[in-house]
Image (cartoon, rainbow, N blue to C red):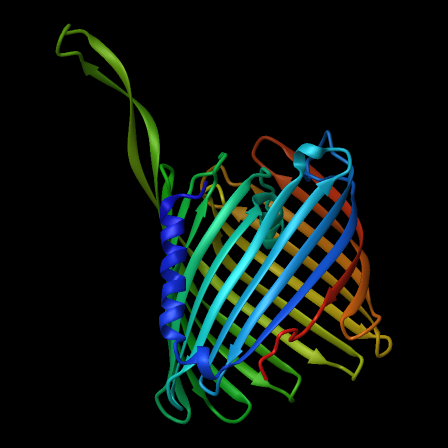
Length: 410
């Protein structure tokens, strides 16, 4: 059962939506879009372990739906997906996950725009950590919920300011990770130099509180420049600096005198210890349409983030996505990613992670499509006491159907 604070936050968020969207409910263009995806996957290392690998076939069924309401000033959108996973041989791994998001965009006037977003997810730590930075983790259920409120104000024709903040909260009903309360504040002034060039300053502050484990606070600031080379091609280049404070508990043995007996005794005490760390950060992205059929997206960067087990991770990455449209109904896609991560502290672990994932999509009709593809993941991990690697191959086929604007009011 979910903690009460999760339920209270969900109720409070939807109460805010109902109040702020009062003008939407009457004059909006409402629509309902249902869909479903069914897939079959072969996985030769389900838990991504270095030995005693589990090989299995996995059936996934993903019903999804979207509610959308629009007026000239307001948009309310609700998205919900349920993911059912059934394993052919290892039935104890069967699970049901969910991903839900609600957002309300409101343009108060020509200069001021606000966005309120709320999320609720049930997922598994193993896949999330791998997708983010190639960090292996124990497969455990996790509930995540959160909210974010941001506002953008046009100070002039060329200068705007975005300010936002919110919280994300993670709860592990079966452990072994500590529950997490993560708060974030960001400030982003942007200056439009001309029609194609803009520059800005991005300031972020993160406060991560891991229950009974540690607290990690990070302040980061970076300057960035965006250049629109054409209507479909642009690049973004940014660089900055971050500073991190980490406080955690350390178990120490202390010698003291027992007041009742007068003898010396040893007792275990928990003492707080603080560490500080800093470093440069950067990001780069290039989105380019080479032809009407072929396009690429390249991104690279260096960042600092917190893992599920309260570790600080320095991450360097490069990602590439290739897209090619063979015909009006058939298209191909190939994703390549390389991440190298280093853990903060004396017991740091270095990890190199490579992932290649091609797939082919065939659209039978406007609503029905077929996809098939695969992926290969390889991780090389190095610690002070051991070096080892792990890999995984997945092959899959899926068929999906959606019915856009099934119950549209206009």
